[in-house]
Length: 142
Image (cartoon, rainbow, N blue to C red):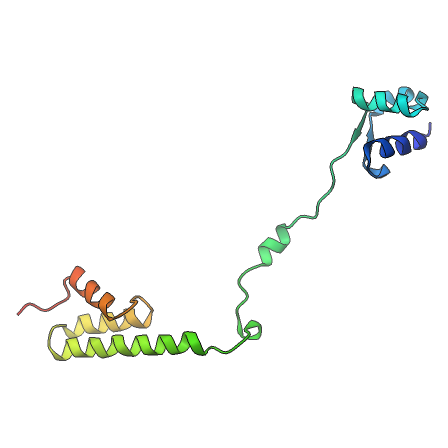
């Protein structure tokens, strides 16, 4: 009960490897009697012989490990452009906050709060600080 030749014929007809050929276990005697290409083709048409789907390699494990790995050993190039921009921005913001505090437009508590927020990167620019102060009514009343 060897279906080797039928499997080989089906593989050549379907244009795939022999390992992907599925033969209906209920119809083995019928498949065994098919010896010509024409007979094997009719079995394929009737669904007794089918082509199995290709097995792919799962990317699940790769997806789980592919974070942004940006720690010290992975960085390439200097840190100049971004850091210089940050330094200029944070200095301007802190200078502006000091100015507002010294002009007594900000209460000490508000100044401290805004200083911490600016350190955390909450503000884009000096004008953004002013917008925030206005929106949250942190300016002292005269």
